[in-house]
Image (tube, rainbow over all chains, first blue to last red; front, top):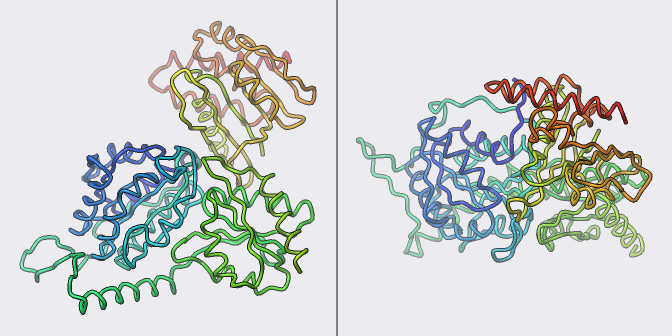
Length: 358
Length: 178
């Protein structure tokens, strides 16, 4: 099949539609307005539902309802809008309803700015709403991956009955690249949901609820959720690594930043510095094994986490490295994106500090 | 790999020229990326986009140091000219901008894009003049790829297609003059 040129936002929509998404609920916010725009055209054409809700809160609760009835449903927003959705996401996680939430991150905190950022890592991976829960969090670094990971998010979410999030920065939303689209999946191929409140029709009564008021019932329910997260951790960690085998400095980043880091690694190598990088594809579950493997090598002197934040993913990197090597940080915020030269300078600095500390 | 930064005033067709370029690269089976700068811009404000065309996988999609700058007005010329890679190329719209880059390590094509576009039939085809110069000066993509893209894009508007193609070819001959 031939490739076509698509925006990241359009690729996300196609990934969703081609894996059976038939309900989209959203509310406009830059830089992801192309998602609802695209869905508003496509959904009616394929017998799906598109609603521009009156607010982000309404949109996520519409997802709760539609996904609870067994439909593959999605909502999309950007940072401040995703904050508004957190109550609904926590309810959906408790009720064990699969769905996909897209966050095209912009600069925060507050209403912030509209340019790319990665300041929502904590919110996405540590449970942005209340209570003990997690989302499956996937971080695309290209337009192709924006499509592929959204496609996969629906299967993962259904499989574990855990809501999934696509966590992308503003650049992914606006970037255009060639994409090979997966074939349109026939809805009849998608496994039936035996818990969905899809009408009585002689079936046993089914209830989806996030109010479990008796402590002797809530604790086992939460434990059951945790078992699911453990299973996800065991089976679904994904990452990409590049030239880490003999690396003295291992850089790490996710999303578009990881591509700038990859360019920086190539340049560092040209300058004779043994650099490599790790790009987590799943942010939850975090691919800690990739870091542990590098940390156990004698050649690895230091790690450097590069983020569009003040340092969020670095906490998971430090846990994974577990004190075996120093972990340094370089970040930009406010919608600014570092260029290769900044990252190269930070990597040299980190290596220098690590060697001095030895 | 070639990194091209296209900049100008909103409405000059900077973004669509960038997309034509990316589409043309894709048709040639190359790796391409197109990144429009988006920001709190208003109508009449500035617009720019980065296009990368490469035989290999494109790592960073950013164009902080472009090989080629297409500047369609004076403010974008002055803003981005210092960033162009040493040995690179600047194609500037001489109709509405001066062409003094303040450096002699780049080749500057001073092209009266608006005037040439009006000669071709429509001032709105100034962006195609710029692409014509680019293709002749760099072979970033082939001439026929751009022409094919134009035919595809304006399939229902033969006159628009004709004007744009004329503008594109005028740009190519202008580049030959240096």
